[in-house]
Length: 184
Length: 413
Image 1: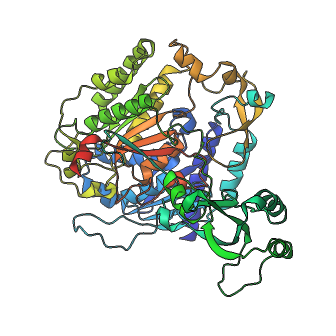
Image 2: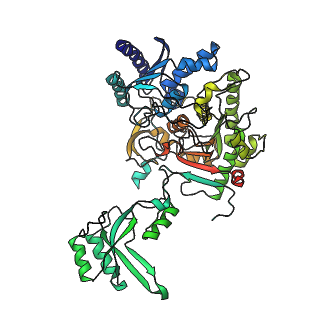
Image 3: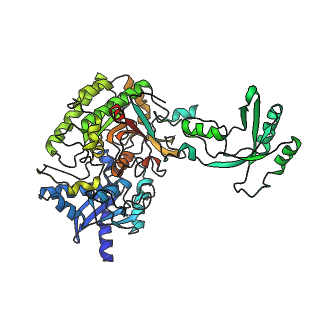
Protein backbone atom coordinates (compact mmCIF):
# COMPACT_ATOMS: atom_id res chain seq x y z
CA UNK A 1 0.00 0.00 0.00
CA UNK A 2 2.77 2.36 1.03
CA UNK A 3 4.75 1.63 -2.13
CA UNK A 4 1.60 2.07 -4.21
CA UNK A 5 1.15 5.52 -2.71
CA UNK A 6 4.70 6.46 -3.63
CA UNK A 7 4.24 5.16 -7.15
CA UNK A 8 1.09 7.27 -7.59
CA UNK A 9 2.81 10.33 -6.17
CA UNK A 10 5.67 9.68 -8.56
CA UNK A 11 3.17 10.07 -11.39
CA UNK A 12 1.90 13.32 -9.89
CA UNK A 13 5.48 14.60 -9.67
CA UNK A 14 5.92 13.69 -13.32
CA UNK A 15 2.92 15.87 -14.16
CA UNK A 16 4.44 18.70 -12.13
CA UNK A 17 7.64 18.36 -14.13
CA UNK A 18 5.66 18.68 -17.34
CA UNK A 19 4.19 21.89 -15.95
CA UNK A 20 7.65 23.19 -15.13
CA UNK A 21 8.83 22.48 -18.67
CA UNK A 22 5.95 24.60 -19.95
CA UNK A 23 6.91 27.46 -17.62
CA UNK A 24 3.92 26.79 -15.41
CA UNK A 25 3.89 26.71 -11.60
CA UNK A 26 4.93 23.06 -11.13
CA UNK A 27 1.97 21.24 -9.58
CA UNK A 28 0.68 17.92 -10.85
CA UNK A 29 -1.86 15.32 -9.80
CA UNK A 30 -3.42 11.96 -10.58
CA UNK A 31 -6.84 10.53 -9.76
CA UNK A 32 -6.93 6.88 -8.71
CA UNK A 33 -10.03 4.70 -8.74
CA UNK A 34 -10.00 0.99 -7.94
CA UNK A 35 -6.21 1.02 -8.03
CA UNK A 36 -6.07 2.51 -11.53
CA UNK A 37 -5.00 5.93 -12.73
CA UNK A 38 -8.13 7.38 -14.32
CA UNK A 39 -6.95 10.95 -14.96
CA UNK A 40 -3.95 13.17 -14.54
CA UNK A 41 -3.54 16.90 -14.62
CA UNK A 42 -1.04 19.68 -14.33
CA UNK A 43 -1.19 23.38 -13.77
CA UNK A 44 -2.11 25.41 -16.88
CA UNK A 45 -2.69 28.85 -15.44
CA UNK A 46 -0.18 30.68 -17.62
CA UNK A 47 -1.16 29.06 -20.87
CA UNK A 48 -4.89 29.61 -20.34
CA UNK A 49 -4.51 32.99 -18.61
CA UNK A 50 -7.02 31.52 -16.22
CA UNK A 51 -5.58 31.35 -12.72
CA UNK A 52 -8.15 28.74 -11.69
CA UNK A 53 -6.76 26.09 -14.04
CA UNK A 54 -4.96 24.20 -11.32
CA UNK A 55 -3.87 20.59 -11.80
CA UNK A 56 -6.89 19.28 -9.88
CA UNK A 57 -9.37 21.26 -11.99
CA UNK A 58 -7.74 20.00 -15.18
CA UNK A 59 -8.02 16.38 -14.07
CA UNK A 60 -11.60 16.83 -12.82
CA UNK A 61 -12.67 18.22 -16.19
CA UNK A 62 -11.13 15.25 -17.97
CA UNK A 63 -13.14 12.92 -15.74
CA UNK A 64 -16.37 14.87 -16.15
CA UNK A 65 -16.07 14.81 -19.91
CA UNK A 66 -15.20 11.14 -20.01
CA UNK A 67 -18.00 10.03 -17.71
CA UNK A 68 -20.57 12.02 -19.59
CA UNK A 69 -19.41 10.68 -22.88
CA UNK A 70 -19.97 7.26 -21.36
CA UNK A 71 -23.50 8.36 -20.48
CA UNK A 72 -23.15 8.20 -16.70
CA UNK A 73 -25.93 9.71 -14.63
CA UNK A 74 -25.34 12.27 -11.92
CA UNK A 75 -25.61 9.71 -9.18
CA UNK A 76 -23.19 7.40 -10.97
CA UNK A 77 -20.71 10.26 -11.32
CA UNK A 78 -21.16 11.09 -7.64
CA UNK A 79 -20.55 7.45 -6.76
CA UNK A 80 -17.41 7.37 -8.88
CA UNK A 81 -15.99 10.45 -7.19
CA UNK A 82 -16.69 8.89 -3.80
CA UNK A 83 -14.29 6.08 -4.76
CA UNK A 84 -11.54 8.38 -6.03
CA UNK A 85 -8.21 9.06 -4.35
CA UNK A 86 -6.28 12.14 -5.41
CA UNK A 87 -2.49 12.36 -5.33
CA UNK A 88 -1.30 15.93 -5.74
CA UNK A 89 2.19 17.36 -5.28
CA UNK A 90 1.02 20.37 -3.24
CA UNK A 91 -1.80 20.71 -0.69
CA UNK A 92 -4.98 21.66 -2.59
CA UNK A 93 -5.69 25.39 -2.40
CA UNK A 94 -8.91 26.68 -0.86
CA UNK A 95 -10.66 26.65 -4.24
CA UNK A 96 -9.60 23.09 -5.11
CA UNK A 97 -10.30 21.78 -1.61
CA UNK A 98 -13.80 23.27 -1.83
CA UNK A 99 -14.23 21.69 -5.27
CA UNK A 100 -13.10 18.27 -3.98
CA UNK A 101 -15.60 18.55 -1.15
CA UNK A 102 -18.37 19.49 -3.60
CA UNK A 103 -17.56 16.41 -5.68
CA UNK A 104 -17.38 14.20 -2.58
CA UNK A 105 -13.96 12.72 -3.18
CA UNK A 106 -12.85 9.90 -0.89
CA UNK A 107 -9.28 10.76 -0.02
CA UNK A 108 -6.37 13.09 -0.79
CA UNK A 109 -2.61 12.60 -0.48
CA UNK A 110 -0.39 15.63 -1.01
CA UNK A 111 3.32 16.44 -1.03
CA UNK A 112 4.14 19.80 0.48
CA UNK A 113 1.86 22.05 2.47
CA UNK A 114 0.50 25.21 0.87
CA UNK A 115 1.03 27.82 3.53
CA UNK A 116 -0.45 30.68 1.58
CA UNK A 117 -3.57 29.16 0.04
CA UNK A 118 -3.98 25.69 1.51
CA UNK A 119 -7.54 24.50 2.02
CA UNK A 120 -6.70 21.21 3.77
CA UNK A 121 -5.35 22.48 7.05
CA UNK A 122 -2.96 25.33 6.26
CA UNK A 123 -5.42 28.24 5.96
CA UNK A 124 -8.84 26.60 6.01
CA UNK A 125 -9.74 22.99 6.80
CA UNK A 126 -12.32 22.24 4.16
CA UNK A 127 -11.51 18.52 4.25
CA UNK A 128 -12.79 18.04 7.78
CA UNK A 129 -16.52 17.50 7.58
CA UNK A 130 -18.81 19.49 9.75
CA UNK A 131 -20.85 17.40 12.13
CA UNK A 132 -23.43 20.13 12.56
CA UNK A 133 -26.88 18.89 11.62
CA UNK A 134 -28.61 21.08 9.14
CA UNK A 135 -32.18 22.05 9.75
CA UNK A 136 -33.65 20.99 6.45
CA UNK A 137 -33.61 17.26 5.81
CA UNK A 138 -33.33 17.77 2.06
CA UNK A 139 -30.09 19.69 2.25
CA UNK A 140 -27.16 17.31 1.97
CA UNK A 141 -24.30 17.80 4.39
CA UNK A 142 -21.10 19.29 3.20
CA UNK A 143 -18.67 16.49 2.62
CA UNK A 144 -15.27 16.04 4.12
CA UNK A 145 -12.50 13.78 2.92
CA UNK A 146 -9.50 12.07 4.43
CA UNK A 147 -6.34 14.03 3.82
CA UNK A 148 -2.69 13.08 4.36
CA UNK A 149 0.29 15.31 3.64
CA UNK A 150 4.02 14.77 3.50
CA UNK A 151 4.32 12.33 0.63
CA UNK A 152 7.50 13.05 -1.35
CA UNK A 153 7.59 16.57 0.04
CA UNK A 154 11.18 17.32 -0.87
CA UNK A 155 10.63 16.42 -4.54
CA UNK A 156 7.60 18.70 -4.70
CA UNK A 157 9.41 21.56 -2.98
CA UNK A 158 12.50 21.27 -5.16
CA UNK A 159 10.35 21.71 -8.27
CA UNK A 160 8.94 24.94 -6.81
CA UNK A 161 12.45 26.10 -6.01
CA UNK A 162 13.58 25.48 -9.58
CA UNK A 163 10.56 27.37 -10.86
CA UNK A 164 11.06 30.44 -8.71
CA UNK A 165 14.78 30.51 -9.36
CA UNK A 166 14.21 30.70 -13.08
CA UNK A 167 11.77 33.54 -12.39
CA UNK A 168 8.06 33.63 -12.93
CA UNK A 169 7.58 35.37 -16.27
CA UNK A 170 3.89 35.65 -15.53
CA UNK A 171 4.24 37.70 -12.34
CA UNK A 172 1.98 40.73 -12.26
CA UNK A 173 3.20 44.16 -13.06
CA UNK A 174 2.22 46.70 -10.43
CA UNK A 175 -1.04 48.40 -11.18
CA UNK A 176 0.64 51.76 -11.40
CA UNK A 177 4.30 51.81 -12.33
CA UNK A 178 6.20 52.50 -9.17
CA UNK A 179 9.21 53.80 -10.95
CA UNK A 180 7.52 57.17 -10.71
CA UNK A 181 7.07 56.86 -7.00
CA UNK A 182 10.76 56.38 -6.47
CA UNK A 183 11.44 59.60 -8.36
CA UNK A 184 9.30 61.60 -5.96
CA UNK B 1 -31.38 58.13 9.70
CA UNK B 2 -31.81 57.94 5.98
CA UNK B 3 -35.49 57.92 5.49
CA UNK B 4 -35.61 56.66 1.97
CA UNK B 5 -32.48 55.47 0.31
CA UNK B 6 -33.08 53.95 -3.08
CA UNK B 7 -29.77 52.07 -3.14
CA UNK B 8 -27.40 50.91 -0.49
CA UNK B 9 -23.88 49.67 -1.06
CA UNK B 10 -22.57 48.09 2.10
CA UNK B 11 -18.87 47.39 2.48
CA UNK B 12 -18.27 43.90 3.92
CA UNK B 13 -15.03 44.44 5.84
CA UNK B 14 -12.15 41.97 6.20
CA UNK B 15 -12.83 41.53 9.89
CA UNK B 16 -16.12 40.40 11.33
CA UNK B 17 -17.89 43.46 12.62
CA UNK B 18 -17.98 44.02 16.37
CA UNK B 19 -21.04 45.84 17.67
CA UNK B 20 -19.85 49.40 18.34
CA UNK B 21 -20.82 49.05 21.99
CA UNK B 22 -18.59 45.99 22.48
CA UNK B 23 -15.28 47.49 21.40
CA UNK B 24 -12.34 46.56 23.60
CA UNK B 25 -11.17 49.11 26.14
CA UNK B 26 -8.14 49.76 28.32
CA UNK B 27 -7.86 51.46 31.69
CA UNK B 28 -6.08 54.78 32.03
CA UNK B 29 -5.44 57.19 34.87
CA UNK B 30 -7.09 60.51 34.23
CA UNK B 31 -7.62 63.62 36.26
CA UNK B 32 -9.48 66.90 36.16
CA UNK B 33 -7.11 69.79 35.55
CA UNK B 34 -7.18 73.55 35.64
CA UNK B 35 -7.69 74.81 32.07
CA UNK B 36 -4.78 77.22 32.45
CA UNK B 37 -2.42 74.28 33.10
CA UNK B 38 -3.57 72.30 30.06
CA UNK B 39 -0.76 73.19 27.64
CA UNK B 40 2.04 72.65 30.13
CA UNK B 41 0.61 69.39 31.36
CA UNK B 42 0.10 67.95 27.90
CA UNK B 43 3.64 68.79 26.95
CA UNK B 44 5.01 67.13 30.08
CA UNK B 45 2.82 64.08 29.85
CA UNK B 46 3.53 63.50 26.18
CA UNK B 47 7.16 63.35 27.11
CA UNK B 48 7.11 61.20 30.22
CA UNK B 49 4.08 59.06 29.47
CA UNK B 50 3.42 58.98 25.72
CA UNK B 51 0.33 57.00 24.72
CA UNK B 52 2.05 54.41 22.62
CA UNK B 53 -0.25 52.40 20.36
CA UNK B 54 -3.12 54.58 21.54
CA UNK B 55 -2.59 57.46 19.14
CA UNK B 56 -6.28 57.56 18.37
CA UNK B 57 -6.97 58.85 21.89
CA UNK B 58 -7.18 62.56 22.53
CA UNK B 59 -5.16 63.44 25.57
CA UNK B 60 -7.67 66.03 26.76
CA UNK B 61 -11.35 65.53 27.37
CA UNK B 62 -13.35 68.74 27.37
CA UNK B 63 -16.83 68.94 28.78
CA UNK B 64 -18.96 72.03 28.85
CA UNK B 65 -20.66 72.47 32.19
CA UNK B 66 -23.82 74.51 32.70
CA UNK B 67 -23.19 78.14 32.07
CA UNK B 68 -20.68 77.36 29.33
CA UNK B 69 -17.81 76.82 31.72
CA UNK B 70 -15.45 74.18 30.30
CA UNK B 71 -14.20 71.32 32.41
CA UNK B 72 -10.98 69.67 31.30
CA UNK B 73 -9.62 66.27 32.17
CA UNK B 74 -6.41 64.70 30.91
CA UNK B 75 -5.11 61.18 30.47
CA UNK B 76 -2.11 60.76 32.78
CA UNK B 77 -0.92 57.29 31.85
CA UNK B 78 -2.02 53.71 31.34
CA UNK B 79 -3.46 51.99 34.37
CA UNK B 80 -3.43 48.39 35.40
CA UNK B 81 -6.25 46.24 34.10
CA UNK B 82 -6.81 44.54 37.43
CA UNK B 83 -9.06 46.38 39.83
CA UNK B 84 -7.08 45.61 42.96
CA UNK B 85 -3.59 46.67 41.93
CA UNK B 86 -3.23 50.35 42.66
CA UNK B 87 0.26 51.86 42.79
CA UNK B 88 1.12 51.44 39.13
CA UNK B 89 1.65 55.10 38.25
CA UNK B 90 5.24 55.86 37.19
CA UNK B 91 7.15 58.16 39.56
CA UNK B 92 7.39 60.96 36.97
CA UNK B 93 3.65 61.02 36.59
CA UNK B 94 3.17 60.78 40.33
CA UNK B 95 5.33 63.87 40.67
CA UNK B 96 3.09 65.83 38.33
CA UNK B 97 0.06 64.64 40.24
CA UNK B 98 1.58 65.93 43.46
CA UNK B 99 2.81 69.26 42.17
CA UNK B 100 -0.45 70.14 40.41
CA UNK B 101 -2.62 68.77 43.16
CA UNK B 102 -4.44 66.36 40.84
CA UNK B 103 -6.90 63.68 41.90
CA UNK B 104 -6.36 60.74 39.55
CA UNK B 105 -9.14 58.33 38.75
CA UNK B 106 -9.23 55.24 36.57
CA UNK B 107 -11.40 55.32 33.50
CA UNK B 108 -11.97 53.13 30.44
CA UNK B 109 -10.97 54.29 26.97
CA UNK B 110 -11.14 52.57 23.58
CA UNK B 111 -8.21 50.30 22.87
CA UNK B 112 -8.24 50.49 19.06
CA UNK B 113 -8.82 53.22 16.52
CA UNK B 114 -12.38 53.32 15.22
CA UNK B 115 -12.99 51.62 11.85
CA UNK B 116 -16.33 53.24 11.21
CA UNK B 117 -18.20 56.36 12.10
CA UNK B 118 -20.50 54.28 14.30
CA UNK B 119 -17.57 52.88 16.25
CA UNK B 120 -16.10 56.34 16.62
CA UNK B 121 -19.35 57.80 17.94
CA UNK B 122 -19.52 55.02 20.50
CA UNK B 123 -15.86 55.52 21.50
CA UNK B 124 -16.38 59.21 22.16
CA UNK B 125 -18.93 58.35 24.82
CA UNK B 126 -16.03 56.93 26.85
CA UNK B 127 -13.29 59.35 25.91
CA UNK B 128 -12.80 61.41 22.74
CA UNK B 129 -10.81 59.75 19.96
CA UNK B 130 -9.86 60.80 16.50
CA UNK B 131 -11.27 58.98 13.50
CA UNK B 132 -9.64 58.66 10.11
CA UNK B 133 -11.80 56.97 7.52
CA UNK B 134 -9.89 54.15 5.81
CA UNK B 135 -7.79 55.23 2.88
CA UNK B 136 -7.09 51.94 1.10
CA UNK B 137 -6.59 52.32 -2.57
CA UNK B 138 -9.68 50.33 -3.45
CA UNK B 139 -12.42 52.69 -4.55
CA UNK B 140 -15.65 52.52 -2.68
CA UNK B 141 -14.49 51.57 0.79
CA UNK B 142 -14.73 55.22 1.69
CA UNK B 143 -18.01 55.61 -0.17
CA UNK B 144 -19.23 55.96 -3.73
CA UNK B 145 -19.81 59.06 -5.77
CA UNK B 146 -23.34 59.41 -7.06
CA UNK B 147 -22.19 58.51 -10.54
CA UNK B 148 -20.29 55.43 -9.41
CA UNK B 149 -23.18 54.30 -7.23
CA UNK B 150 -25.48 54.61 -10.23
CA UNK B 151 -23.16 52.46 -12.29
CA UNK B 152 -22.89 49.84 -9.53
CA UNK B 153 -26.65 49.75 -9.24
CA UNK B 154 -27.09 49.41 -12.97
CA UNK B 155 -24.65 46.51 -13.27
CA UNK B 156 -26.19 44.78 -10.28
CA UNK B 157 -29.64 45.10 -11.78
CA UNK B 158 -28.34 43.55 -14.99
CA UNK B 159 -26.81 40.71 -12.99
CA UNK B 160 -30.03 39.95 -11.14
CA UNK B 161 -31.98 40.03 -14.39
CA UNK B 162 -29.44 37.67 -15.91
CA UNK B 163 -29.91 35.33 -12.95
CA UNK B 164 -33.58 34.92 -13.80
CA UNK B 165 -33.24 35.00 -17.57
CA UNK B 166 -33.02 31.21 -17.82
CA UNK B 167 -35.79 28.83 -18.79
CA UNK B 168 -37.59 28.56 -15.51
CA UNK B 169 -34.95 28.15 -12.84
CA UNK B 170 -33.25 30.97 -11.06
CA UNK B 171 -29.48 30.53 -11.06
CA UNK B 172 -26.51 32.59 -9.96
CA UNK B 173 -25.19 35.09 -12.47
CA UNK B 174 -21.84 36.86 -12.78
CA UNK B 175 -20.80 39.92 -14.76
CA UNK B 176 -17.15 40.98 -14.88
CA UNK B 177 -16.76 44.70 -15.51
CA UNK B 178 -13.89 47.05 -16.21
CA UNK B 179 -14.94 49.93 -13.96
CA UNK B 180 -12.73 52.50 -15.67
CA UNK B 181 -14.79 52.40 -18.83
CA UNK B 182 -17.86 50.70 -17.37
CA UNK B 183 -17.45 47.95 -19.88
CA UNK B 184 -18.64 44.37 -19.55
CA UNK B 185 -15.69 41.98 -19.91
CA UNK B 186 -17.60 38.72 -19.46
CA UNK B 187 -20.91 37.49 -18.18
CA UNK B 188 -22.14 34.03 -17.26
CA UNK B 189 -24.77 32.01 -15.43
CA UNK B 190 -24.45 28.78 -13.48
CA UNK B 191 -23.89 25.86 -15.81
CA UNK B 192 -24.16 23.14 -13.22
CA UNK B 193 -27.41 21.62 -14.44
CA UNK B 194 -27.31 22.01 -18.16
CA UNK B 195 -24.83 23.33 -20.54
CA UNK B 196 -25.11 23.18 -24.28
CA UNK B 197 -21.47 22.76 -24.96
CA UNK B 198 -21.36 23.73 -28.61
CA UNK B 199 -23.86 26.54 -28.67
CA UNK B 200 -22.29 27.98 -25.56
CA UNK B 201 -18.94 28.20 -27.22
CA UNK B 202 -20.47 29.97 -30.16
CA UNK B 203 -22.18 32.41 -27.84
CA UNK B 204 -18.92 33.23 -26.10
CA UNK B 205 -17.21 33.81 -29.43
CA UNK B 206 -19.92 36.17 -30.53
CA UNK B 207 -19.50 37.98 -27.28
CA UNK B 208 -15.86 38.85 -27.94
CA UNK B 209 -16.65 40.49 -31.21
CA UNK B 210 -19.35 42.55 -29.60
CA UNK B 211 -16.79 43.54 -27.00
CA UNK B 212 -14.35 44.60 -29.66
CA UNK B 213 -16.89 46.91 -31.22
CA UNK B 214 -17.83 48.26 -27.86
CA UNK B 215 -14.28 49.28 -27.15
CA UNK B 216 -14.53 51.97 -29.74
CA UNK B 217 -18.16 52.77 -29.11
CA UNK B 218 -17.48 53.74 -25.48
CA UNK B 219 -20.40 52.10 -23.81
CA UNK B 220 -21.86 53.55 -20.66
CA UNK B 221 -23.56 51.71 -17.88
CA UNK B 222 -27.05 52.64 -18.93
CA UNK B 223 -26.52 51.35 -22.41
CA UNK B 224 -25.17 48.09 -21.10
CA UNK B 225 -28.21 47.71 -18.94
CA UNK B 226 -30.37 48.06 -22.01
CA UNK B 227 -28.13 45.82 -24.08
CA UNK B 228 -28.68 42.83 -21.87
CA UNK B 229 -32.20 42.40 -23.06
CA UNK B 230 -34.10 42.16 -19.87
CA UNK B 231 -36.98 39.82 -20.34
CA UNK B 232 -38.56 39.78 -16.97
CA UNK B 233 -39.29 42.71 -14.76
CA UNK B 234 -40.36 40.90 -11.64
CA UNK B 235 -38.98 42.18 -8.39
CA UNK B 236 -35.98 40.65 -6.72
CA UNK B 237 -37.93 39.39 -3.74
CA UNK B 238 -39.53 36.75 -5.94
CA UNK B 239 -36.02 35.69 -6.71
CA UNK B 240 -35.12 34.77 -3.19
CA UNK B 241 -38.04 32.40 -2.82
CA UNK B 242 -37.16 30.14 -5.71
CA UNK B 243 -33.41 30.01 -5.54
CA UNK B 244 -32.86 26.27 -5.22
CA UNK B 245 -30.92 26.11 -8.48
CA UNK B 246 -28.34 28.69 -7.39
CA UNK B 247 -25.21 26.56 -7.26
CA UNK B 248 -23.31 28.62 -4.69
CA UNK B 249 -26.15 28.33 -2.16
CA UNK B 250 -25.69 24.60 -1.86
CA UNK B 251 -22.79 23.35 -3.93
CA UNK B 252 -23.24 19.80 -2.59
CA UNK B 253 -26.75 19.47 -3.98
CA UNK B 254 -25.74 18.66 -7.55
CA UNK B 255 -25.75 14.88 -7.22
CA UNK B 256 -29.25 14.77 -5.77
CA UNK B 257 -30.91 17.15 -8.15
CA UNK B 258 -33.67 15.43 -10.03
CA UNK B 259 -33.88 16.25 -13.67
CA UNK B 260 -36.96 15.60 -15.76
CA UNK B 261 -34.97 15.81 -18.94
CA UNK B 262 -31.41 14.84 -19.42
CA UNK B 263 -29.30 17.90 -20.08
CA UNK B 264 -26.83 17.90 -22.92
CA UNK B 265 -23.95 18.56 -20.56
CA UNK B 266 -23.57 19.28 -16.89
CA UNK B 267 -20.73 19.91 -14.48
CA UNK B 268 -20.94 20.28 -10.70
CA UNK B 269 -18.22 22.95 -10.62
CA UNK B 270 -19.45 25.23 -13.38
CA UNK B 271 -20.69 27.95 -11.07
CA UNK B 272 -21.35 31.36 -12.62
CA UNK B 273 -18.15 32.97 -11.29
CA UNK B 274 -16.01 30.10 -12.59
CA UNK B 275 -17.64 30.30 -16.03
CA UNK B 276 -17.24 34.08 -16.10
CA UNK B 277 -13.55 33.79 -15.22
CA UNK B 278 -13.15 31.28 -18.04
CA UNK B 279 -14.88 33.66 -20.46
CA UNK B 280 -12.67 36.59 -19.42
CA UNK B 281 -9.56 34.44 -19.88
CA UNK B 282 -10.82 33.41 -23.33
CA UNK B 283 -11.39 37.06 -24.17
CA UNK B 284 -7.85 37.87 -23.04
CA UNK B 285 -6.44 35.15 -25.31
CA UNK B 286 -8.58 36.38 -28.16
CA UNK B 287 -7.72 40.07 -27.83
CA UNK B 288 -4.05 39.57 -27.09
CA UNK B 289 -3.14 36.37 -28.88
CA UNK B 290 0.59 36.94 -29.07
CA UNK B 291 1.37 38.70 -25.87
CA UNK B 292 2.87 35.99 -23.81
CA UNK B 293 6.29 36.30 -22.30
CA UNK B 294 8.70 36.95 -25.11
CA UNK B 295 12.43 36.76 -25.13
CA UNK B 296 13.37 40.34 -25.81
CA UNK B 297 11.50 41.99 -22.97
CA UNK B 298 13.82 42.72 -20.11
CA UNK B 299 12.92 42.91 -16.49
CA UNK B 300 13.50 45.51 -13.86
CA UNK B 301 13.12 45.25 -10.15
CA UNK B 302 10.49 47.36 -8.64
CA UNK B 303 8.70 47.53 -5.33
CA UNK B 304 5.16 46.37 -5.62
CA UNK B 305 2.54 48.18 -3.65
CA UNK B 306 -0.84 46.59 -3.43
CA UNK B 307 -3.97 47.14 -1.48
CA UNK B 308 -2.82 44.60 1.05
CA UNK B 309 -0.87 45.72 4.07
CA UNK B 310 1.93 43.25 3.54
CA UNK B 311 5.38 44.79 3.35
CA UNK B 312 6.33 45.90 -0.10
CA UNK B 313 7.48 42.91 -2.04
CA UNK B 314 10.15 42.83 -4.62
CA UNK B 315 8.50 42.02 -7.86
CA UNK B 316 9.87 41.60 -11.28
CA UNK B 317 7.94 43.60 -13.76
CA UNK B 318 8.06 43.81 -17.44
CA UNK B 319 9.57 47.08 -18.54
CA UNK B 320 7.90 46.83 -21.89
CA UNK B 321 4.51 46.84 -20.22
CA UNK B 322 5.32 49.86 -18.13
CA UNK B 323 6.38 51.79 -21.18
CA UNK B 324 3.03 51.19 -22.77
CA UNK B 325 1.63 53.72 -20.34
CA UNK B 326 -1.11 53.51 -17.75
CA UNK B 327 -4.23 51.57 -18.50
CA UNK B 328 -6.22 54.61 -17.54
CA UNK B 329 -4.85 56.73 -20.34
CA UNK B 330 -5.42 54.09 -22.93
CA UNK B 331 -9.00 53.67 -21.85
CA UNK B 332 -10.06 57.27 -21.48
CA UNK B 333 -8.73 58.05 -24.91
CA UNK B 334 -11.27 55.57 -26.18
CA UNK B 335 -8.58 54.36 -28.50
CA UNK B 336 -8.02 50.85 -29.73
CA UNK B 337 -4.73 50.56 -27.94
CA UNK B 338 -5.99 48.45 -25.08
CA UNK B 339 -3.41 47.46 -22.53
CA UNK B 340 -3.59 43.82 -21.67
CA UNK B 341 -4.50 43.41 -18.02
CA UNK B 342 -2.88 40.78 -15.83
CA UNK B 343 -5.77 38.35 -15.29
CA UNK B 344 -8.68 40.40 -13.89
CA UNK B 345 -6.55 43.00 -12.10
CA UNK B 346 -8.60 46.17 -11.79
CA UNK B 347 -11.87 44.51 -12.72
CA UNK B 348 -15.06 44.21 -10.70
CA UNK B 349 -17.41 41.24 -10.58
CA UNK B 350 -21.13 41.44 -9.93
CA UNK B 351 -22.80 38.34 -8.53
CA UNK B 352 -26.47 37.90 -7.70
CA UNK B 353 -25.56 35.76 -4.67
CA UNK B 354 -22.58 35.84 -2.33
CA UNK B 355 -20.19 33.24 -3.76
CA UNK B 356 -19.34 29.88 -2.16
CA UNK B 357 -15.80 29.10 -1.00
CA UNK B 358 -14.70 27.64 -4.33
CA UNK B 359 -15.88 30.68 -6.29
CA UNK B 360 -14.58 33.21 -3.76
CA UNK B 361 -11.11 31.65 -3.89
CA UNK B 362 -11.24 31.47 -7.69
CA UNK B 363 -11.81 35.24 -7.65
CA UNK B 364 -8.75 35.68 -5.42
CA UNK B 365 -6.68 33.69 -7.92
CA UNK B 366 -7.95 35.72 -10.85
CA UNK B 367 -7.15 39.00 -8.99
CA UNK B 368 -10.59 40.57 -9.09
CA UNK B 369 -10.47 44.01 -7.49
CA UNK B 370 -14.01 44.37 -6.11
CA UNK B 371 -16.92 41.98 -5.60
CA UNK B 372 -20.50 43.19 -5.50
CA UNK B 373 -23.29 40.82 -4.57
CA UNK B 374 -26.98 41.36 -3.98
CA UNK B 375 -28.05 38.49 -1.74
CA UNK B 376 -26.14 36.93 1.16
CA UNK B 377 -25.50 33.18 1.19
CA UNK B 378 -25.84 32.27 4.84
CA UNK B 379 -25.27 28.51 4.47
CA UNK B 380 -22.24 28.48 2.17
CA UNK B 381 -21.07 32.06 1.53
CA UNK B 382 -17.34 32.74 1.80
CA UNK B 383 -17.35 36.54 1.96
CA UNK B 384 -18.61 36.97 5.49
CA UNK B 385 -21.29 34.31 5.99
CA UNK B 386 -19.39 31.05 6.62
CA UNK B 387 -15.87 32.13 5.70
CA UNK B 388 -14.42 35.59 5.09
CA UNK B 389 -11.72 35.26 2.45
CA UNK B 390 -11.27 39.02 2.12
CA UNK B 391 -9.85 38.87 5.65
CA UNK B 392 -7.49 35.91 5.20
CA UNK B 393 -4.17 37.67 5.66
CA UNK B 394 -2.02 34.93 4.15
CA UNK B 395 -3.59 35.19 0.68
CA UNK B 396 -1.55 37.05 -1.91
CA UNK B 397 -4.47 39.14 -3.12
CA UNK B 398 -7.35 40.86 -1.39
CA UNK B 399 -10.45 42.24 -3.01
CA UNK B 400 -12.95 44.61 -1.47
CA UNK B 401 -16.43 43.19 -0.97
CA UNK B 402 -19.73 45.05 -1.14
CA UNK B 403 -23.32 44.03 -0.78
CA UNK B 404 -25.72 45.98 -2.95
CA UNK B 405 -29.15 46.21 -1.40
CA UNK B 406 -31.67 46.55 -4.16
CA UNK B 407 -34.61 48.87 -3.67
CA UNK B 408 -37.21 46.14 -4.20
CA UNK B 409 -35.73 44.27 -1.32
CA UNK B 410 -35.91 47.39 0.78
CA UNK B 411 -39.64 47.64 0.20
CA UNK B 412 -40.03 44.13 1.55
CA UNK B 413 -39.01 45.13 5.04
